[in-house]
Amino acid sequence: SQQGEEDPQALSIQEGENATMNCSYKTSINNLQWYRQNSGRGLVHLILIRSNEREKHSGRLRVTLDTSKKSSSLLITASRAADTASYFCVPNSGNTPLVFGKGTRLSVIA
Amino acid sequence: DAGVIQSPRHEVTEMGQEVTLRCKPISGHNSLFWYRQTMMRGLELLIYFNNNVPIDDSGMPEDRFSAKMPNASFSTLKIQPSEPRDSAVYFCASSSDTVVGYTFGSGTRLTVV
Image (cartoon, rainbow over all chains, first blue to last red; front, side, top):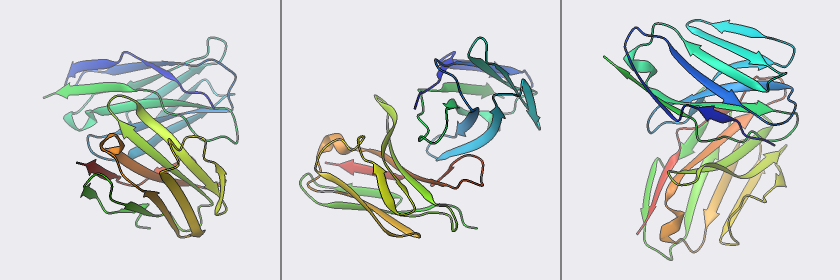
């Protein structure tokens, strides 16, 4: 198993702005997953992008994957106060448990 | 489905006492994971089961920690004896081969005083 490294560690934006979080990993993957954790709650699966995909959308979320650079990004458009949370990227190489990094702490200020 | 159910939500216990955390995975999920989260160490995988069988317990910090999964709908994580450094939020998650991603419970916040 490998963990992703999220960047930045913390991000603070105004409501309505877009938030971009980046992720890097070290070895080849089958897919990469993004999770959100609101304060005091369990993690919630947001989106999965497979290694043969370059971009994926889900509502206000847009995820990109560049396997040549071993990197991914998560864009949240038109952010809301409710988007305030920690976001984790998890590279997945196959039948091994997911390992979580430290995440990006996003604060959306109303 | 009610999701992954953990109990209790909060537990405060004295050092040296036995603590048992409980988890009910989503019906039909065949993998179950126990994680521990602290500010210092982040989210750590403790142990995981596949089809009720423990596959990897290398993340269990000490022999004071043990986990069981007697059937597909129930798992326990036991700490005996508990120590203040065990204070953390303990999460249970489940998954299956046909479902994308893990589903996490709401966690048990353990405080050992």
